[in-house]
Length: 471
Image (tube, rainbow, N blue to C red):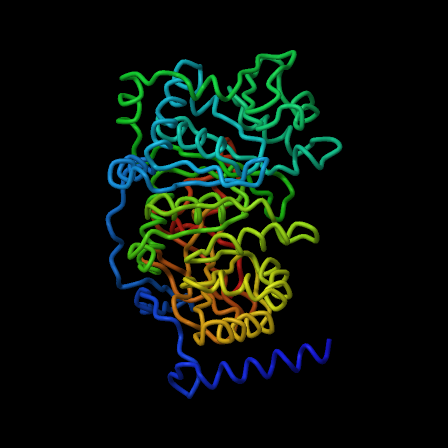
């Protein structure tokens, strides 16, 4: 191994010698259009600090599926979403095909007794059917809740799943494979709740094949319902336990999701210069994958390749295979994912050449990135391309849709969370020698579903959401 390290170091030195050197005689950063890094600051007499961006928040659509309709008309043949089939080939869906399927499924949903009080719960993970059902529900104003898969497949008592079902009172539940989720369904669902499944739909309860929903003929009722979907319409519920262990249903409105994409677009405007391509595993039951990344692709007319790998032994190789096959323009991951990819990139020239071929930004969130991982990935980028790649990050939560504070410049030290995004006001309240972060903005949740006491406790007397992080 030591011989291999010496060999890599030598090759890296030769590459550095050829690299385009920028300031401080270091390899230049790959050119990327980023938003301004500026802020207005107000110091209060009580020691609190208010911060906000001077950049105005750009206009945003009234609902998410306006962008789906736009891209279905503007770029109908562009791939929107792709997933490997059983044989390993990419199964793809264009924007036009996606919008047609969404309208068909929406028509089927409108024939059922579904509403805010009887929403849709999705038990299974990221796949094309999940995406279509969620978009169809939002298109006609029916909220849905993607539930963390381990609550169904890794629990022995299904305690958290039962609590979520109790809060939601769903009128329809989707599981990609009914057989895989049979125990969870039997344990947590009332017997009269309809189950929709993509495969193995047979059951002793009301069960419908997903293909039946997708084959419904759209009617004028779809357009009528869609016309009523506005900024205050509830789009989804995302459940987070936080520090309590009790699943809380965070209300996500259309205003939150759409405004947050405007905020993100102002911070990283390069996503509007060319359609972004993502290879992404992050679960849609969490706000990072389900709101930040999925909605970014939809809003910018990009392409999302579903990665069925994850940062676990035996699964990270699946991610590597996908990155060897599809070159992303922006790569999102949690720090553990970057750490586990590092030795694979070091060992596989074809993998790193494809990953870095058109990559504009590497983006981490969810935890702090180790400095040595950041530095090693930058060295690999230079070794492969002669350029450094931007490493960006952001801070937010499920309640903030999620991006609220973002670092939109290259910080050589990890852990710099940056500044408030346009449209966000940050209040830093002195507390025990640090500052507690509180937030206001169009991206902030109105509260927790059917939890008025928790909602009241989450906001201060000025209406700032208490993020709970100390800075």
